[in-house]
View (cartoon, rainbow, N blue to C red):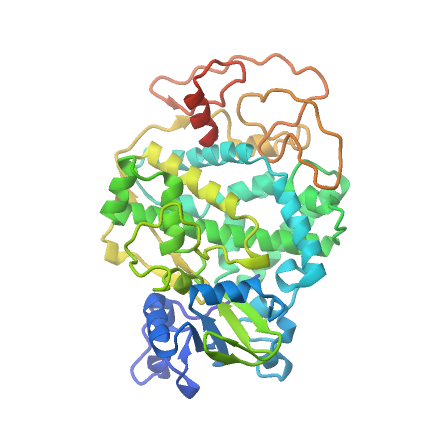
Length: 519
């Protein structure tokens, strides 16, 4: 889904321009777009909470009225009660009476599509079931190995320079590399795909072309997987007993790719920014008082990758947070304001480690099904980066950092850093090149030491738990060829540890540690 927004933060309107008064509109409602909303969303949430409580009337682009839900418990009720608040945008009264035109700036978000996020009831269960079942088949250990190697490949590109932009050179690329691996299209990963994914959520003049590029990539993938199934996410959606059409498969792949990319890229950038700008955060992390997963979870409370989600539509007249909601009204899930609700967080400086009650991944039947993959990408990626470059420092003053915002998210534009130059690390092989090598059997993506051979499970379309998945070696039908000794690294070159061979002796704690870090 695209998210078009034409205002770019930082652009100052000329004197006497009506844009100076974009903060409020008809009826005194505050606008959820424009300079104030995009430059200081937290300040806007505070004003709305003070004026209206836990549910506030707001204006979307074109001064279309909607409700922003600010309270934590109110958001939980909103997301958990589809009988009252539907995801079917065709219920929107403003759409039915023509108040919202087909070319409205938010049309790509609310225009109904044949995907589970716009469905309720049995249809939602069928489509969502195909997605969740397919995600359960992903080998998370194999994925973590790939994340570690992808991270080191990216760090190799700038480790010798002593400076980098961790947004454009790391956070923007790592999630796309991982998702291409999971989907089964490593050969499609390139700079154009990364930029298209970012561009189509910005509402630029090229957003439509960017979307078309991504749809074309996914159409080719589905066509290949119909003809030649492989142990990857795209094949599992194609073959699922939900019998989704090609259009449904492509649209769900597109939804998952963009949602996973945008949210995880933002999450990685936000975690790294907090590490670099908050001395207490950095000290607790480097001192061993906080793990990287705990740092990620704290960031999901303080800087969620999505600030709000549009939308829900009232099935009938109802009441929420003391406000009278009419049938067909539009509502937004307020993720960021819910995470700072004084009822659940009276002290915003309090440590939230181990507490997953935040709404960073929404809630209810439409809660993000891929949140654990997103966490893994951030956990392993940030850890790998900090292990390679432990002396990272922010390369500019914190006040110079800039964001691009919209009603759904805030994207850090750049995160310049400096560090002591360090040598590249030798990888077992270039991960994506190995995965995309046409001469290898379909699905043979192993880029580490061979895994222990186990019998291949009988194929079943219903709830099968495979022994391999994206990132793991397909189980051989014949005896494997003897492994060759790895080449000696060049003098002075550090080596990324290979996956531990099954027969290698190791103490229990070493084994657990290596498993957790994906080695």
